[in-house]
Figure 1 (spheres, one colour):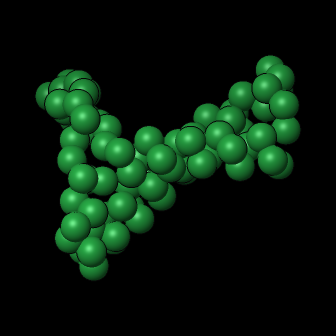
Figure 2 (figure 1 turned 180 degrees about the vertical axis):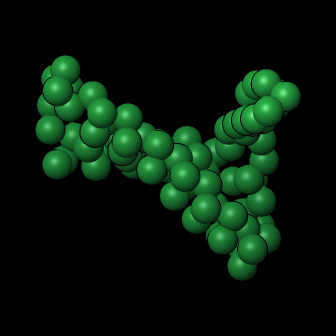
Length: 78
């Protein structure tokens, strides 16, 4: 796909799914291969908000970034 206005939703979906799957696979990899702990080290502090009713925090790590990059590459291939 190309980066057209009509494909922006798909692009964001690929990025989000890539980040979630990258983080999950990074956690799984660290569980079985503790030497890969650098994949799960946080690159930022918690980024988020607290509205007293709902709270959301985001922590970026290396495995999530790898997942985002793979999501963008997959988006370009589709």
